[in-house]
Length: 383
Image (tube, rainbow, N blue to C red):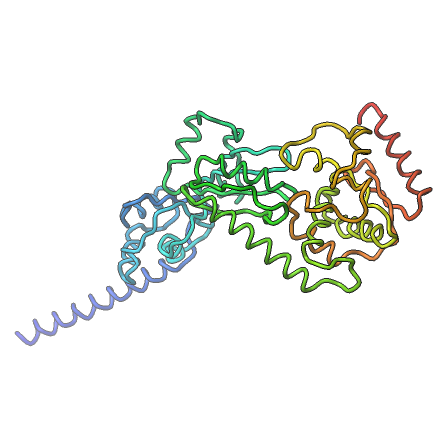
């Protein structure tokens, strides 16, 4: 009898182990299988959150097939204690294993809200924007001028969240004074930048920072990036250019940057100025004259006067030969590369063509025709 009882117990244990093994195998398959999400979501992990609360949030957003399997899977491979707070983009169809990797590997948040200090050519503003996970595009929520003194609740609430990201974007063609003034004013930065950096040495780019980031360190990063871009472009320059130093190339790149906003035109515009230098012929470009008036500290906001075009200043390229003494803005990578590897053309002249671009000409007669065409477009009521 005892043998019969022992045999039955042994059989039950075998069946139990088989069932348990099947359950474990099913759980493992479910853990790595495609998840139920039909579109991406933004998952927020608060500071101090535990695995149970994260699993519950995922279950509520229908991102996991089983919060229990999610927790067991995390505990099984030791990731249950490695949660990192922040806001994370979870793509459609992500498995529980993939979601766990997203929230435990650390690094910058990939979703949620950003506060952006946008330094443009004509204005500087704070922008609060939030990523729409369904489209993976940022939607603007609040826009405020740089001079804001009392920030509204919509801004303060977002800016004080621990996982909000802060970003500074610098437009190509912004001046060093504009960047210096904006950074010294930015409410989420600390420290001081005593002097305006030299014109042209700051890289127009996007810089992610933390609240309380040091202003001087940020300027140093901008200078280092621009120096690297210029050094690489100088190393790869074509032969026969009229530059003796990389700094001279930077000056012309800043002029190209201010003359055209059309990416496809940069190398052509660069060729025009290089052709003028080769003639030799004065550069005759309005942006340098404007810089001589404003020194990059304000937008002129009007056309140039005849007296200003006739004035003898170091930046009046209608009056001086060759390049002005310094850059007139901070050029981007494309403009730097354009002057060091320009298109090969015979163009000497160009004028706006009414489409945002320019009409180019080899002879003065062709140029005068283009100018007359532009004048007619300007005179039309819709322009």
